[in-house]
Length: 201
Image (cartoon, rainbow, N blue to C red; front, side, top):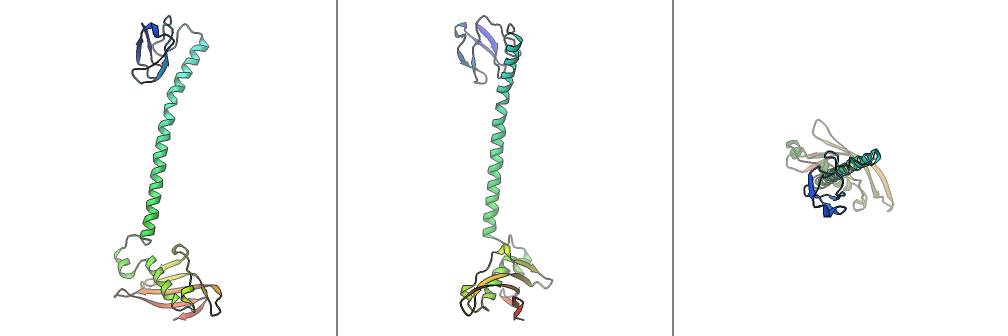
């Protein structure tokens, strides 16, 4: 009978001496290990033949520690994958939420006076009505506009637009509009200037 500790989990292992030199599975951790020769008496703490030379014992100890350390990167890898998946899910949720509701959850003021996204969309529509070719108007995205609300709850929207002039040529102009939501839910265009030229005063 051969008795020795598992080099991975240190569990006590006993096998028939006829299995000396064969590869067996540890009954405790399931790790594969090579059965030592029947004549060897293994150290109970480190699983190394005490009759082996100093270099052999050192090599055995190093190999054991490397096997134990090899299990740790697997845990860190799994944890890193979980963190990455969570970050991707959160980013996707924020993107979808932003597309569905660019202005975010509406407060009482937003419901009464409108949100910034609603003000920008309304300003585009009202500005287009004062162009030579409204259907040709191309406005930038919400993120490219400067939108503020003053103390009187009027929205000031400033950005650019591309539209055809009376000759059919696409030109770019800077515009500033002041819009306000009324009590009945409609919007009014209080003022509009394009390239510094007043259109609505």
